[in-house]
Image (cartoon, rainbow, N blue to C red; front, side):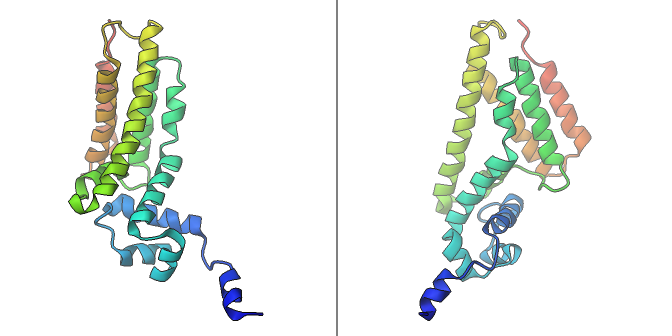
Length: 201
């Protein structure tokens, strides 16, 4: 058998899904620019050549990690949007955000927030990716609130985009607060105060 063909057909010596999850933890903790290739490969348990062969360069790895983050950590956005009222949608989003930022296995900050703050102009494509994904979430929430207004669940004068911006700002703010050490009780108070401000007429 041709040795080069044999090497090409040899199974990988690592689980790409587990390696990507490990990379996500580093990016989530350090941000895009704060994560070095040495940290990433050590956490992933692979060599740099293996990283490049399986995931591409660091930027491509981050894009894949961001997709994993949204798939595994932000699934609650879709389920929250299915709640019967706009208020229930919002409270579900805030409570789930609280759970993520205070979970023992999760870094205490939002990956998108970390990356937006840490990136310089040299990582413009990362900013574009993060902003694009946030825009998708914003659009979905605006559409849900617009439907709630049409159904009489929200006051007719209320601007769905403004309300969505408010809710997302609270969610992002919770990520920032968690990142600088805010505890569970403090974040719970943020959620409670936000819900007391919910428009009623």
